[in-house]
Length: 387
Image 1: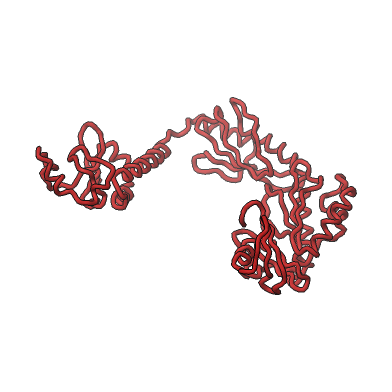
Image 2: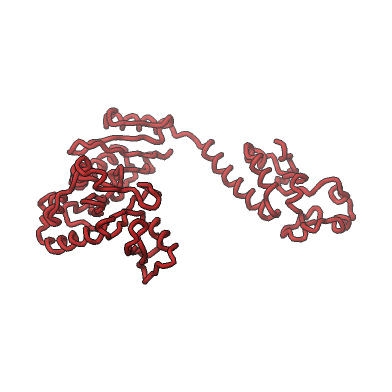
């Protein structure tokens, strides 16, 4: 490979200094190198033992990397990267550190490419287990059968997937499992953990979360969920619209989905404060035997509007500063308290706006200023860190 000629049988690698000098041709008199060395070389922290000269990476067009055939084989395909780093590295020490990282990546990729394939017993036992489970449970598998995806339905007819990454020593080594659950999925490992036993544990876990998913599905179907826009099976939070630029954010416990969730009201004070008062006053009415949505209706004394019923004009969600609905995945959650305004803003947008006003002031974690729309007083309460 160009740029990687073999050095000698010793197998060492180093950077060769510029050729054409007496020192590089084996001359015993190395003093001319010291006389002619450039000023930039005096700052180089490395030292080349062959020439007793501090090499300068600015001479990279005249530098070559000499290495053994073993290293040259490992670096096959990385020639351009090495040349680029040799050109842009500020000194020899930096280049050698980057060369070390390139070698680590090259060795890792080489080991993955040349990894020994699993024995025939791996495939025969795998095919047998899938046959016992039923081929209709198999969703997909890669060409090496190292990653397979299985499906299952819970008692409510919802389809769930489990991805298994099998190792070469399977079943002696348990596979890695990936599921979309609200809590971590722990597999009881045995010296011979089979796909059948893992799948059985997967089915048992599905049934344990049935009540939780029933609760979340009812919320998604009968209310206007603002966030997340496309909830996954692992999502435990919902931000639900309750009226004109007002919403409630709930965090549901997957293990006890019908218990009172953590609640946070978002919106103008004149809208959300009465809701907070009702929650405190009626909390004794909470009945775990009822659904979570029904309990919220009873305690808050409201009917949650569905998305089809709530007009966009009644729930203007575009930020009044950036004029966007979503900003880095967040939607407006700050609202002007003026009933005649009620303009929503992203927290970060309102923070930057208030921080730029000369008339704004801050007391602890609360910013006081004026609404960009109606110029009425507006406050922003910041959590432990800046938005």
